[in-house]
Image (cartoon, rainbow, N blue to C red; front, side, top):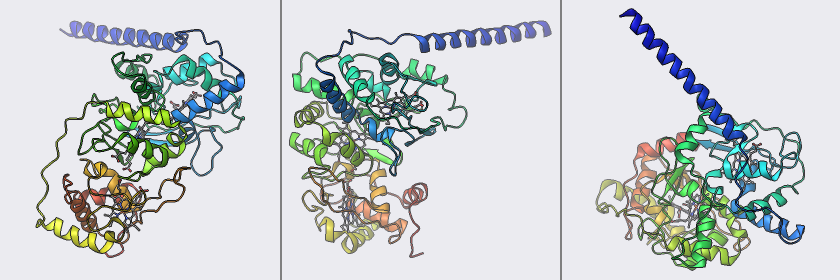
Length: 433
Ligand code: HEC
Ligand code: HEC
Ligand code: HEC
């Protein structure tokens, strides 16, 4: 009896050790494997032309936004902090500094990081969107490298991995990649137009729109509901399928182009992480590429969500909400929620307002929001903060009212969720207490 338990114990330990050795060998092999390249990477045209194309790819992929620390850090010198459900990750220094940046790298090493998720310390965390960049073309990667190499060296050491145990163990990402990373070159859909396929290439690859607009499972992998809405660090990135209630169903191609170019259109004004994406990335894209993105989005199958039934106007929370709206919001957003064209978003028929998850609305009402600043729309209004002015109950009620008036319909917002966001997002306390 005792002996057989011992034997079983020894076998289990033996198997575990053997498993760990095989796993470690596999990871080691994977890390040292040469990168996949489908075609020769011989440069096209002059070096200047290549660098200019690479700069455009860097805009499309928004590299600078993540690789520049907030508050005036040197461009591409890293240190931008990304909050994930697992902890904080800082972005790397990708200037050509030889010690603290990637000045000693080759094109192959660069490709291995950007399209394969393997950097100087081993596996990269998917906060660096290599899962999307994997479908970028060889030509784009080659041009991008030509541009990145020209970035002046900045000495700035960064310790990327700030995660708590066990998430700080990079080798675990070998398992994560096996589950969620399917590195595939971009495949055009022959049944669709050239324009649609250009849009698909930009959205799925460089644009990494799914990084925010697709929901994540509990391990941070993409859910199967592609572009049907996702949460990120306290914000909600809405459904981008043509769903008429919570998605882009009522947006025209021009509405989408205008929004990505200027941060505002006839329907809405961008806020939060999308304003950053517009300012740093999409406003710099050619109108033809923005159009291609819009054609691709409008060509998706609408998500299946159905609008919830609206709350009745004599619901207690609706009545309080109406009073708050009429005293605090009406001057800007107008009594019927129509806003002011391209300056103050309409709240009526606004997909973001109708989204199931009110996270972004809570951010904006509690802390206010600066309007986007783009070349196409350099001056715009801002939304004042109401954290100090309104109680949790008043904010919950006014949002419930806005989400259930003028044809809108969405779940009520609770005072408890206002209190939670107020605390977790560093909003001020209500002064009326
Ligand atoms: C959403 C934010 C984000 C975007 C966009 C992004 N990166 Fe990163 N990148 C990161 C983070 C975070 C890390 C560090 C990850 C880690 O250490 O595991 C990183 C790491 C890297 C590394 C590895 C450096 C090293 O020493 O290992 C390279 C190279 C890199 N990024 C290049 C790029 C390029 C080029 C682009 C644009 C095509 C880009 N990144 C866009 C967040 C981003
Ligand atoms: C860093 C995260 C992030 C990335 C990357 C991102 N978005 Fe967004 N997006 C958001 C958030 C958050 C909102 C909600 C902003 C708001 O409510 O004003 C949003 C809003 C939008 C809207 C407006 C939707 C509506 O109903 O009001 C459109 C259109 C959009 N994004 C398109 C895109 C496209 C196309 C891409 C890729 C090129 C992209 N986004 C990449 C976070 C992101
Ligand atoms: C001084 C004018 C002004 C007042 C007053 C005001 N807003 Fe706003 N609101 C704005 C502007 C401008 C924006 C766009 C901000 C941005 O995204 O850059 C905005 C954005 C919003 C959004 C986000 C819409 C979206 O598409 O994501 C909501 C929700 C909102 N306001 C609700 C309210 C509520 C509720 C009140 C009253 C408690 C209120 N606002 C008062 C100007 C105002």
